Length: 87
Image (cartoon, rainbow, N blue to C red; front, side, top):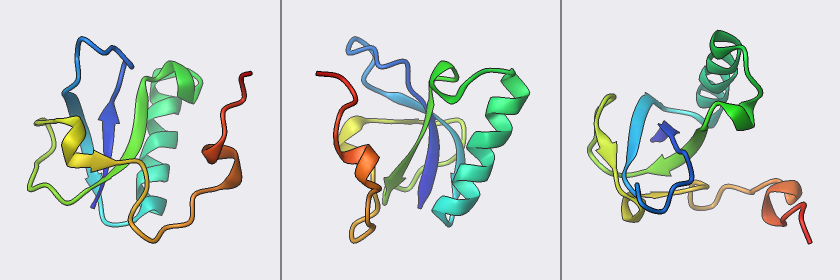
């Protein structure tokens, strides 16, 4: 399943809070857009991202890095997501 997680990119806080769970990436993307609008911030300022997990978790729980990946196995990641914009 896809999960929307709160991620401050802080190495001292590896566990991530699960905001919501979704059956498809499309519904997770809608939830991410809604969160962006609710917070009145750009996506990068929401500290929220979509991940894929097979862990048995619920909204409001925490998930560790070994329990999720950025893309569903077999899912084609967009070209722009594969390479850094920075040098």
